[in-house]
Image (cartoon, rainbow, N blue to C red; front, side, top):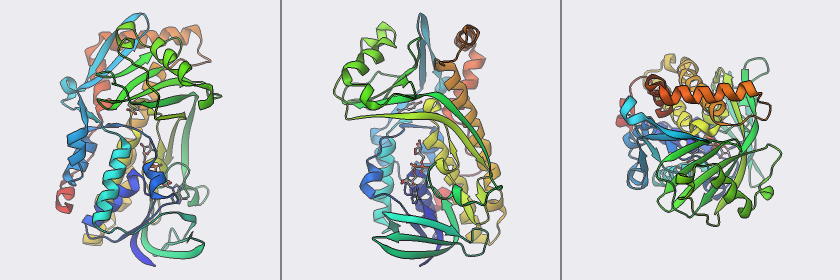
Length: 400
Ligand code: APR
Ligand code: PHB
């Protein structure tokens, strides 16, 4: 087979890019290792920056998001023994964010793909990438035991942290930056009313987070040791521990209910530079991972593919590679701001096993400073609400 842009990965990054390129009249084939149902079965993030909502809205993909999404002015920070404070993004920077599950976005993207009869090869196995720095890269893979080959002009590596794309770049080309945190998050999705706000809690027993998917579906997280597994956290242990980490006036509104999903994810920060090699462009988790503390993962995937989609549309329209050659530089600016913010919030809100008394005191005074200093809250609001996606988004209107 031959196509213009081969997209590896049918997650949010791959499907949104495929949608943008199709609107620009650019042919794509998406190669996805898992089945469609497996991709749809993932429970992931749920907070969309205003720029993410704008991209989806301009593409006409935000109808259900506008109907079901829960718009927030900001988020609350509480920590044991002291009063809470609210980081008001709406007041500080005039931006709001929307609680809307990534699963919903995945469904919306697959429905849009069905409407355009998109070429998606699910259960594509054993992908190998060749000729990344040639004029016609080649992807070999197997579907249903049959070996296939796909020639293309460009490859978009949207295959997540464990994908094949980044690993296919010759050794010595990429520089990787990584930080592994000494804990994970146990996430629970439960059919029970959520708290009214997104609340981050710093407690001596560990970090906790209260979020939501809709008025009847709450999303909660607690920091757990890396050595823990889901089996160590039966419901009768999880709920009292979550409740213990919130102040009484908030804990009173947490009503335990049998979860519909429970999983543990380790926390890491990771960035690869550059985010491109020859005709391969990395986007989303394939290029970077953020700890979920800043709710940035999905939003970075959206900004990456917006930059990449705009650059590819420019190439096929004009024949010039200028925007494509600048993709990594422009994408990494927003990536590193989000990576730093996620790192800052993770250090601010978690209890680190190796923390000294000094570390703990310093953390408490960072919280005191943030609570007492409007300019510090504004700076955090600016980052949490998400920096602008650089350049014009008008190309999205043209696509729609
Ligand atoms: N071949 C084909 N597909 C692959 C391969 C491979 N070798 N490896 C991984 N994939 C697929 C995965 O099955 C997955 O569906 O690539 C897709 C990558 O999707 P995500 O991991 O969701 O990454 P991305 O689209 O960048 O979205 C980032 O998802 O993981 C969350 O927290 C993250 O919210 C963020 C968002
Ligand atoms: C979520 O709703 O899943 C969520 C909210 C805020 C975060 C991370 C996850 O920082």
